[in-house]
Image (cartoon, rainbow, N blue to C red; front, side):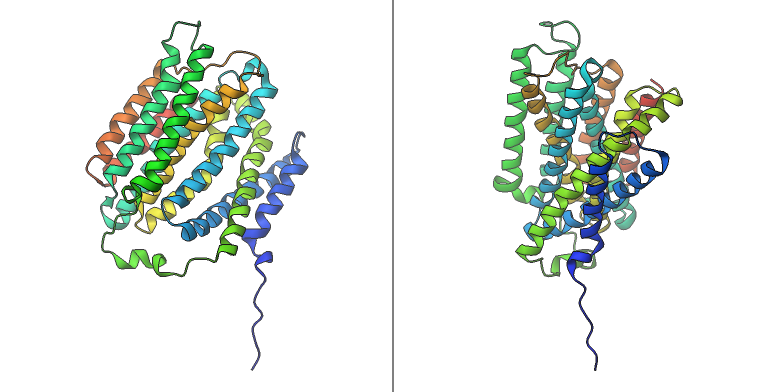
Length: 367
């Protein structure tokens, strides 16, 4: 009787695609790409997104919740912050509002897009999406505080003209953001970890993955390394195709801020797909951990990094939001509070969040 050869894990697509995407990034970085090259890089970007989601789930299965969600959120954010600082160092005055626009786009996409889609998927599958209001509410309170301190207050402070912080104010915002982020991580992973675990709804079939043997430590470390490679490729390839996106946006006569929204959507794709897949398995709490964890990390890590980088960056640093965006942020906080308070959500709540995101995207195109 013949034996079946086991395929080496090194030739699996989840291993090859991140490496190929990283090679595409190296070859395309800093170059003007022709049309066919943009298409190839875009395909590598899509493949890297799918690979990142796979490896994030492998790592999450090994370390358990909420550590798995935390690893993906922090990894994406650290790389995103590095990209922002790099672009600001190269862009001069024209990138003065880049950090603000990117962080606010991330907050709206996570708190309305990822949350809304996850609630829709969970409610469509089980009529009612169930989650822990204690953990999700604490995460929302952290997002609201960070966003207000870093993105709203600069519009109203008077130490410097325009929506800017003075050096002392920026230092305070950076220290406060970092302290709040550290406190949230400590509560999420140690002191009140049970608040961030998926709710047991008694639907055993939906939790069949819980009974699968976790991957070995070696497999988890390999997936962690490949996750980082895939995320670097996602952000880098998004940057590589951004000139083409900028040209298309300019040709269409759209505001320049649309470019930042598109890049943010691309960068957050791994977390979005991971959240949707978790919601399909009746793990809406995991989806919310990804959404709010990403928003907290985006503000809590970006503001300190920008504050540090401002030592050598020239030009102004515009952080304050305009009136329209402040209204959308306030609406997001109010709607999210009403959504999370009961610990249960239906299609309606998911639809409301999607509409708020649609309003943000529409006003980005037509301010």
